[in-house]
Image (cartoon, rainbow, N blue to C red; front, top):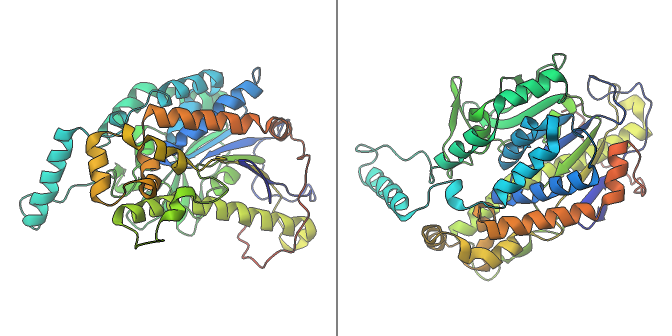
Length: 421
């Protein structure tokens, strides 16, 4: 896999045109491009920087993304962009306006009074074994985020953009706690079909604020959200195939924007060296795993599958090669977060200290919760710089041209093939 700063190119040699991984919905020139926005809490500010740079690279272009897929915090940006798909440059400006002025209290309540009430609730519930008060639904109350999204996202505009054909599909991921099924709620062109795979489904829906709030409901941190008869949590949970929704929705090329550096875990590597990891450090490690590992594994699986299709297409009938491009931070966000720990609200800093997420080693967890403008602006700038550095590759990608550099085909390890996923 080619690695270039904050970018991985996953290029797949051509195969017979009759081979198809998913039903071809429309024929477009340039090709149908999907945008996949991974989850990552406050780290998702990096994705805003990527979009800002793309708006500069494609100043006169209509919406370059026929399909938009978002998970967790990526679902917030996906929804906002879909609502502005008819004027996507305006959508990028609106996203930057919000993210560059973010503060933690815009996302969840961390004022001293709120934290004291939450602490008293937890204590009384524990001491009474839940008899006087049931256990709290989550550590934080993210009601402020719901209020912000209700003001900022026009869900009717999303429906209109789909109906007009400006947008082929928009998809938001969540996971039901009843049965643990990963669910992709999507709205799209009439010919797009729902799908069902082991422990994951795609369901056509009229999207609304509950879907995005479910997608961002990180377990323990934020409350689950009821949709229909079930409660849902963060879309990154049990997300075994993050690229699958884009493929099902007709993508021919996929631009993936991640939130973890390709070079490794950064400051997270300090965890568990001199002493056992603390509760806070373990939680940061779990979040890092939740939001990144499945995505990187799915890209690797795609590389292997496409090499197999190119070399022996008769072994995988009904499968076509795809091209994907991954943009990821050239600097590990936790390294940047370590410089801004002092900007967090006092109550949140105290909580992080109590659970052992203090200092440099605690910045891994803090980087997911640091909805503070000093941090988010740095990530926006990083995303913009990383993307502009890949100008030629990106313009070729959107034009449907092959990358200028192709990785030599390596021997393929045995893998289980499951079609489109």
